[in-house]
Amino acid sequence: MSTPIAPEVVDQVHEVARRARLAARRLAQLTRAQKDAALLALADAVDGAAEQVVAANVEDLDRGRDKGLPENLLDRLTMDAGRVRSVADALRQIASLPDPVGEVVRGSTLANGLQIRQVRVPMGVIGMIYEARPNVTVDAAGLALKSGNAVILRGGSAAASTNAALVDVLRAALADQGLDPDAVNLLSEGGHDAARALMTARGLVDLVIPRGGASLIRTVVTESTVPVIETGVGNCHVYVDASADTDMAVRIVTNSKTHRTSVCNAAEALLVHRAAADRVLPAVMAGLAAAGVTVHGDEEMRPYAEAAGATWTPVTPEDDDTEFLSLDISARVVDDLDAAITHVQDHTSGHTEAIVTADRASARRFTAEVDAAAVLVNASTRFTDGGEFGFGAEIGISTQKLHARGPMALPELTTTKWVVEGDGQVR
Image 1: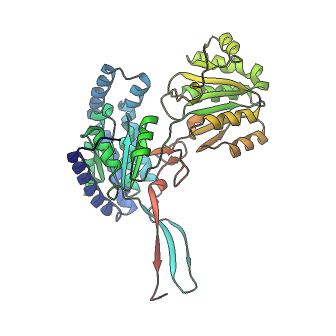
Image 2 (image 1 turned 60 degrees about the vertical axis):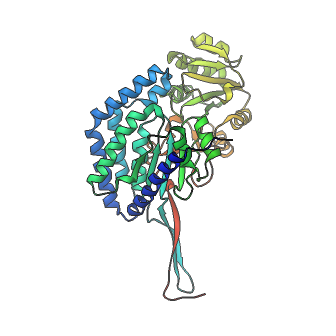
Image 3 (image 1 turned 45 degrees about the vertical axis):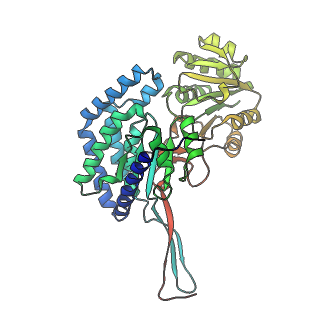
């Protein structure tokens, strides 16, 4: 049983949530023009504060190295000048996107003259619990503002200095625009108790979204009394079918695995149809070897890996379920499409799965039978991303099936209400 949350931390978080609820009521009244102007002002403010943000990030990186954080986490933590520009540009892109609030989902006029319509409205107050990714701080604030929500951020301690610097900039920019700065809040004190108080603040917080490793997500899902949208880890597979084009397979496998290893849409597993192994694997293994990938392979993979100069190690059952987030990949030769689909279904995290094939029937079966938030045909797993899908910055990638699934952007941060207008009708 969990230890009780410190009462003073509960009081602190609840007070933040109450202020956020008031801010959310005010945000719900804003027009698109007002929200877009605020987002552009926030983007300019972030750009203007790049030097202070980078300096704060250097503090976090130094602490992280002293604590022995692995390279993949240091990469996620890094907020250099280029990444500051990127998050500022993401705010500008959000400003350019359609406003989901007020969109009529469906509606009709009844026989009695009542006009009914289902419209999108903000969620209210959204809690974000996340780890060492300070870009999430800006993305979440921007997406929440555009969708009319207030946000309470609980970032990981590894990014404490960077998150504090960014939120200071965002709150000051909101105040300069005449908006309530409590639309963006950071829980910087209280440790794990603050996160627990946030995810149990039912009635004050409307939704919690965890973003991070498997342990964090599992904790939030199991302990939260506030509704949760589960953003899952990415144990993503690339399956190379018998008919796959060799050059295409090399490009997709290499890009999926090595383009950026520390993200959830990086490939962690490779499956190759036995009929394609002799033709495809020499080139695929050469591509992985050139990138320094360690292949956790079955015995059939071993000669191809060793001939290409790739580091090979025997694959274990644990490897099949591991999100490596590094230059490692599990790799197996499979008998056919059925075996590939079965393996994927047994080990997928429900994030992204890809097939490389020239056979339309195989592609149709794979997309129909594989149960994941995104299924790609002849494309890198790295495309499962809100920005790449044209949604602007994403607040996370949902691997659950209710309300939202896949990259979550503006519409997924709204709910609906029914508005009914009459002229005196009674039942």
